[in-house]
Length: 475
Image (cartoon, rainbow, N blue to C red):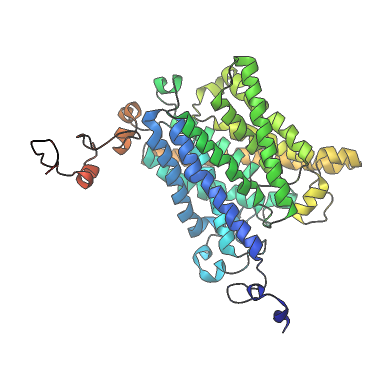
């Protein structure tokens, strides 16, 4: 009888169980889709337009393939490895629950929505991590090797970081590491793994590396814009509830990105006397990356400060240190993923340990454990020095773990793949680009009498030319 007091659309039934909050579920699905759009079409467009014309298709397809391959692996075994029952302190037990109706329609381990929503939400984060790694490898990695790399890295690297840091049973989660939405799991991991993989794959052809004009900067900006706006779901979805914390995280995200973009732009003007469009895009990305581990646990002024630092420190590492340090110069990181994600992600992880507001941390983590989740600045302010120092120490332990694990796991994966297939394209493919690799070109105009080089495509699309009358028009 109690249900009579509720509107009919709020009364529990088989499709709307008592434990589910419709608003939270709708927001979770929306957030996940926004993050998915960052990858497809966001990074597909950005990668395809920022590289040389001859690599446009290959770069876009690397991202598109990773998105599809990760989804199949994720529901097959990846989700349970990252969020399932504990196998070891850094990995869950593999099983196929994410394909079973009973599991998918039951309540998720956190939040008031079903496991199906959680599996989908966590998938888009896993997918974008692999796509970010691809950014370091554009323009020379053998596509077959990439097809092998994606499921292997997801299985043996990503899941370890996700379980350790995000799963309630993970050892770093239990220590109290602050990673609001993936500064460690996604950005630091992808930056380190991308740089490591780039070392093993080797550099692009010298002429590609020395002269690397984007084929369409305006289209690049469209992809960057999708990436920026998609970050609303990236950070706004991680409270797993449509809450005050989600609103704060979204606003902080955009404030930090804007401040970082402006800072990078000003530094380009001061040192190079020209405002670079590509530089502004890099600044936007470093701001988004930096705020990610702290988005909902810092105040607005802290987001401005983080934007100022994320627009200057990665800028300095990319524009100056990279040219001075011998080892950095030896590795050809096509999209500078190490600087935009590893450096910016590390910066954000450290600043989270300094600037995390204890009250905001309680709202996000829903705990009363005061020795945890206190930024060093607030620890000093409140006299809880040890708590603040402990939090910063936990952040540094997390950084060290993610860095070491990704160097080792990525290196082992690349060496194993190298036994089966070459990591690099052939010299002919490196020289010619998309046409040699895929039999297609991004800006080829067909129908003017030319034929596809790829015989299969020619077979599908070849059409007999119409007979012409004396007037020149088709009969």
